[in-house]
Length: 249
Image (tube, rainbow, N blue to C red; front, side):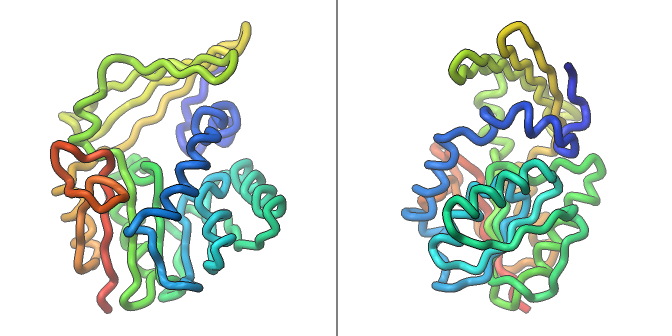
């Protein structure tokens, strides 16, 4: 079986769910919300979790008393997110929508976009459009937190292929640089017993300088870049590319 529809292919998310949203990833989200200065929001803040997936951040944010809206395009992921919320006894709002088109002017104090969920539209103008939509959703003084695997970080580990095992299942991921480092293609092969599933994702990758310029062009002010959720500099020791920006007016 082969999935070529990328992030818009709902079967892709279902088939590769255990590798995309492992127990460790859920635990990481909990830990970050407890410890990261970049995720220390005012009590009761209105938070938009854009590309929320199965509620990895949406649910723990709601448990902590934030007013959370999770937005995703995948019905399968939203079903899992709703179940996770119900199992935990919280009631965040979930909306199925395209990230380019979801706008509620001034309705949120925080917009989150986590775990490299940005840059997947084929037209670069559409990715810029997502940033503008994020800004529209923020109230004046509101904050965007956008988390990526930055281009500089990917350059360290694009080779060799990665092999991950979950129980008896085996995933092999091979990354290929495209268009002079403008984009990256990840080819995934999942071996589950006698069944082999292949999938490909292509997305734009950004350096810190490029992402900062995009945020500023989208109208954000006070744009900062960090090398991790602990607030470290984006330098040779960076673990992630985390951009924080403010809607000034």
